[in-house]
Amino acid sequence: MDLRGEDLFAVAESLAELIGAPVTIEDENSTVLAYSTGEQSVDEARVDTILRRQVPDRLRQLLTEAGVFERLYHDTDVLYVDLHLPEVLPRAAIAVRDGDRPIGSIWAAMKSAPTAMQESILRSAVPVVAEHIAAERDRGDLTRRLQADRVRALINGGEPASRAAGALGVEGRLTVAAAAPLVVGRSLPSGVLSALTLYLEALAVDSVAAQFDDVIYVVIGASESDVRRLAEDFLGRARSGSEFVVAVGREVNTASQAHLSKGDADWVLTALQHARAGGVVGTMKENLASVLALRAADIFDGLGVLTPLAALARHDEQHGTDLVATARAFLSRGGDVSASAAALHVHPNTLRNRLRRCTDSCGVDLTDADTRLILMLHLKLVGLRDH
Figure 1: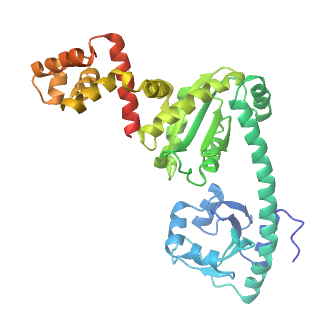
Figure 2: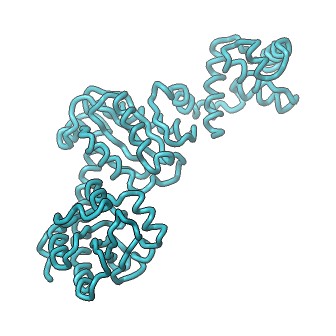
Figure 3: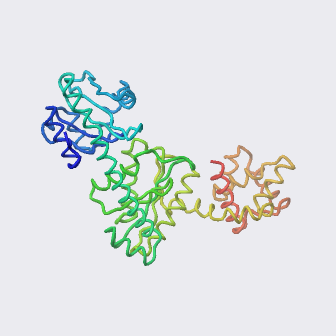
């Protein structure tokens, strides 16, 4: 059987004809790479798999719980898999390897265990399918690198961005969004970029995406509000949506301004990661205070003991007072003495005495607008860092 001159779909068709059973060829993540066209409706699971180009989550879970994937990728021979479910016909399956590394599998829907001849045909197809998958990956890697280079040029703005936008087919108004792990230093869950690309393609949204380290940048030809809505919908659908956050930049009119949207997204992403709330979509408008605090971090750190907050904290440490807590409560309640006192469980007069001590002992006048601004930003920064 010489199938090397055919594409992967032709290989699936030829295999199906030789063994007399519908065939699917999948990668190691259960994404469908090719399938035979005859008898597509052999069972519900095959229909869903082909339509989604992915083995359904429920079936993957059942196969995992039954130990099928573990056996499949540790064995070199054909497995006969019967889950004893009316909607899932038994399958013959064999792993496809590149050396010792599993890179895919071949599945054939069968009502009974495969014959010796059918097993022999499946085994002989493995090296052919391995070559095809490796070749497809090489082509895919080259295409992804080219796209990544163009996306990088696009989100960096300027004249190169205009040329990149033309090559990528994303012109006119656009918005940049960035997705990253909830916890800095962790990797994005596998398959997020592919799932996001498929999601946007299914909606026929003009977009391009690329991953750089642990951040996925998506450039979408839509308004900021529409991109926010798309991101929320995607997070709601994604199995691992709670493990990452999405920041949406401003809408810009031309590709040459894309760096402005990307800059917004980067800062908002940092703010969301500090907040440590997974499955969150944020914009600059919603996170402006946090972004300003983070951008002022170097200034606050450089001033050290000279800041109003440092003066209050030093007094608390030396005298056992609660001036920092008093300032935080007072500022977060808009200077309302009664509400601040209630939050601290003290009498309003006690609060007034503390406010006077802030001024007299620390030189921090909480009725001064500039002092309030500085303190609120610094307290915001401390709150973000505490997360």
